[in-house]
Figure (tube, rainbow, N blue to C red):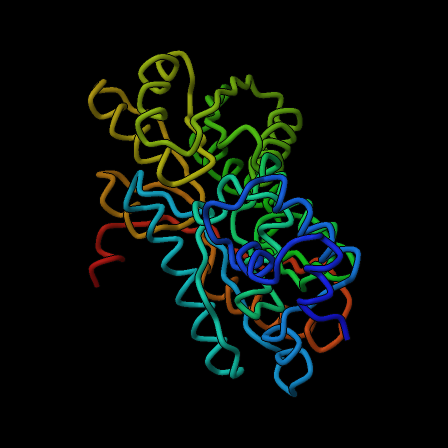
Length: 329
């Protein structure tokens, strides 16, 4: 078995230096980090804590990786539901879970991220909200060192599974319901983040609807921001029949703008968050069961840890019209 002494000798550094690199100590030069990480990779070195977890009958520890944003309370609601669903299911399955935020991995190389998780005895990860821009996470998935379940990112390999709803169909369904109910001919569509996987899928849904129903479609990026959606609604909504939003948060911003403009336009959202009930008007939306999605992600990760191959899991959703009385009852 390769030891830390072997790594130090191979890298031409002291044993203490190897330890510092593996445990992400500050004040270690980039050149030294590269030498140590290269030696670790070449020798296939596994720290003792990780080896012990792998050799035991238990699956090891699971990391819940969340892209936490403090921009709005509504975003926190979704993440809190994800965390509740993950932790609750993990407890039932006797899995040890730690929570890691994207900001904790910021500016780390792929080697540093791997060593960080290995130093924590992590054998599996559940990653929420990964975008196309998260290059290090993409490399982590490609390496297949850990078993990984992605929520809302359609990437699958032998060690990675994906869990989400049919984003394209859900966007199509809620928009069609709203359009047909109100006999609309033109749509202002507020899309999400430009490099988000769900954004791409939801765009496909609204484009399909516009083509099938021969509707005029104006697409603008609202970036999942209530403020940006509000501003875009002020600018474009007067000349459109309906405002279709790729998130409830943007739908709230759009509805508030329409109220201030003193004009009526139907608005629909996406997600089914509680805050939707306080928007002032009823709106159609897609309700996702975030707790269940997280719970299914944990079950899928356990299956991977037990030797299963990666796959895509598509869960169901519900079209609802959220009312104030529904959320206070």
